[in-house]
Length: 212
Picture: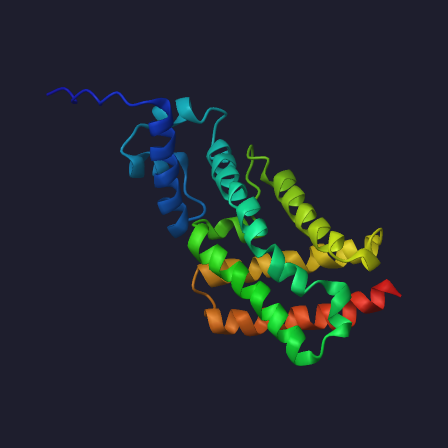
């Protein structure tokens, strides 16, 4: 008996179907193949290749990253007030309790966003850049933009490459923590404590020292 004809769907529907299947598969196995994704979507590997040409999982990862990146502007616009409260050049002027509250506000905003909007923990891992995806350069751009946002809120730090590098390093560490949070390797309470202490030290010790 011949296989029933597959219902014709719009290209956008098929792309969404493949990406949704990829999210589910990659959540369980970040090293899943195109065939694994095709099987989960109920499609052939060849059909997946038509919608995501280029070979391998790279084009699929690139599309997933674009979806992820699209959530960032909304998050920044909603969280900018909290970020401004905890801006680095104001840290030394706040008492410790007020500073910790400001840091807690920012961290919780990040955690809420990650747990509510991000379904791809692998994006926060050091192995996020896959062959053919171009994610490495895009990730650097996202991280750089966020560091520049923090610096723009802190005029005293403007033009300091040391401050920018310190922020980028801390952001990468925070990304690793987000991956562990989303994969269940660390509880939210423990992740919160780790992030709070790291950023408290960053704002009160590291950045002021580098600004001198």
